[in-house]
Amino acid sequence: MNKIVERKRVAVSIAGHDPSGGAGIDADVAAFLACGVHPATVLTCATVQNTLGVSGIFELPKEIVERQIDALAADFEICAAKTGMLHSPKMVKLVARKAAKLGLTLVVDPVLAATTGASLSGCGSYALAKAIAEELLPHAYLVTPNVPEAESLCGIAIRCEDDIREACRKLHGLGARNVLIKGGHFGGGDESTAQDTLFDGREFYTFTLPRIKDKKAHGSGCTLSALITGYLARGMVLKEAVSLSKRVLWSMIKNGYAPGKGVDVLNHSDCGGLFLPPASVLLECGSKRFCAWDELSQAAARLLRSLRAELVAEVGMNFAYALNGAAGHRDVCALNGRISVSRCEEGCASFYGGADFGASKHVASIALAAMAREPDKRCALNVRYGEKNLEACKKAGLSIGNFNRKEQPKDADSSMEWGTADACGRLGFVPDVIWDAGDDGKEPMIRLIGKNPADVLSKLESIIKSRF
Image 1 (cartoon, rainbow, N blue to C red):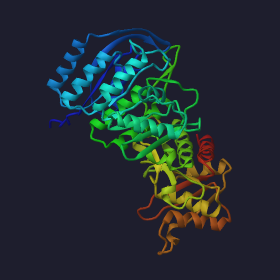
Image 2 (image 1 turned 60 degrees about the vertical axis):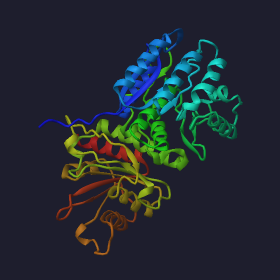
Image 3 (image 1 turned 90 degrees about the horizontal axis):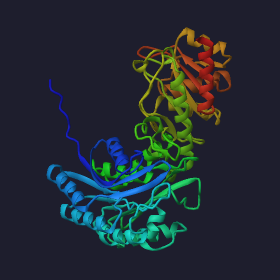
Image 4 (image 1 turned 45 degrees about the vertical axis):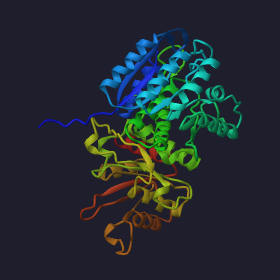
């Protein structure tokens, strides 16, 4: 049978080439691929640069740039496009004219300088910023300046949150339908965070995540605007596209690396799974949620490096961590999906999902029941039941309790909550391990309980050491 291949939507980058691969069209292509869209490109400039800096810029004749745009428009249905390095007012005017003629959904990244600080304008930043403001913004669906670029475009100094909002209004007044001022150069008074501000002409929205220490990522601005463009090309609404792009970029920076002697570059190929923050942990939702997600994700990644197939239950394994004072499952962060035996290779387990609040019911119920008795016991992990595993728990010196499913009252809503409470009640405290021998259609199970993911993981590692 022939495989039906869905036709990919097309996104276009109109920008310069970075031979180091970290920024410009090169980064945009990687970002488009991460979004699941087909990347098409229009080259405006060739640069001589690396991760240490820019030493040369060579602008292509505008006739060649125009022919590239026309060639793509004649062949593709362009779902969204973005601009990057345009270098001169004449190039800005050309792109503005073509965007208007083609009716492009255009994201304007008003690039004026590289991450290393080098100017990317052939006529001075003022003249280039003036051309972008006057010629290109009236055709922009979205403009994505950082703070220095926003200051150049609208002519005001940005020192506080009120200034950012005023700059958004001015840029909207210049014709941009939507404005996103990126917060990499501004923490809203808090240097530990990076806040992006979106204005749609009516409402303001903020997207905030912690800054990543000791990371100065080459191409981060290019990549954010490209991610947004890619998600818009896929039909995502703007607010959702910005939120997802912000979180994907954070993951790319977090997992970035230094291929040369200068600044880091983004890791476009390792930006999902456990390292992709879900929308529920943006700092607007409360910093405690991000911290809990980060703790659990780091511990889960460590878990996967040492986990043995013999410890993974047939129904899979989950890892849950409740917020202090959690009121229900929505306040418990857990793996989105389970680690399963079928994904174990050479005795090690692998997991391709992420972590989020409300992702688990069963293991989350264990954590909630444990903390109902001892509020600092907020984390749980289920492990495959077996005599060898249970014996390893004993050898590791862990405290152990159990319950019998056959004794569960008919009016008990949750087996996990009742069983955990029953085992704790018999002992008078919350043990490290609670097990049960199962029932008809119910797999026997061992559950580890601790104060936090690191605590639970240390108990699992002691079991591994005792058994293997």
